[in-house]
Amino acid sequence: MQTYVALAIVGLSLQGVAAAKAQPPQQPPTPQSQAEARQRAAIKAVLESYEQALNASDVEGVVQLYTGDAVLLPPNAASAVGIDAVRATYTGIFRAIDLDLTFEIAEVSVVSPDWAFLRSSSKGVVTILANGARIPSNNHELFVLHRTRGGWKLARYSFSSILPAS
Image (cartoon, rainbow, N blue to C red; front, top):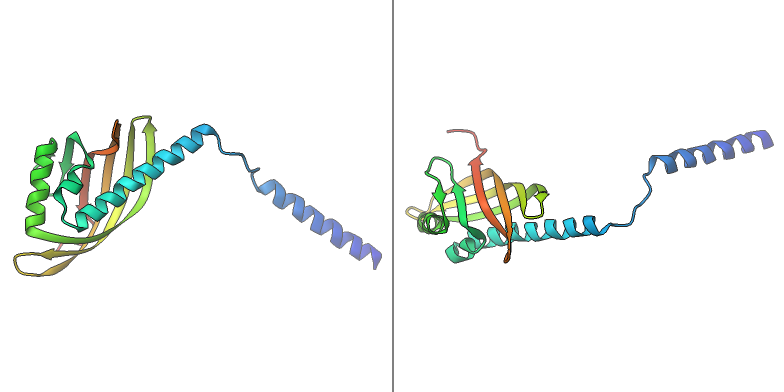
C-alpha cells in the first residue's frame, strides 16, 4: 500500500513539474511594453471616439480625429483627399443617412513610433433619411494612424461591406 501511495505522490509531483515547465515564467512589464500598451490604448480610444461621432452624425467630431492630409477611401466613390474633402464627404453622408454602428477591433499594430494600423469590423443599421428605410450594415475596416502633437489621428481609412451582394 505504501508503494502505491509513494508512486501516486511521485506521479502527482511529476505532473506539477510538467505543468510548471509548460507555463512561461511571468516577466515584469518592460518600459517598452508599457509604452506600447499606452499607445494601443490611445489608438483604441480614437476608434471609440470615431464610433461615437459617427453615430451622432457629428461632422466636426469625426473630422477632428483625422490628420490634415487624411485620405478617406469609401467603396464605390472617389477618394476624399485632404481634410476639407473628408469634411465634405462626411457632411454628405450625414445628410443622406443615419448610422447606428458598433465597432469591434480585430488588430492593432504599432509599426513605428509614429505610425500604426487598426483593423476592425462594424455592424449595425443604416437609416436612409429620405424614406426612413433601415438596412443592415456589416463592414470591415482598415485605419492607418499617424501620431501627431495632438496624439494619434486617422491618416488613411478604407472600409468595405461584407454583406452578400444583392
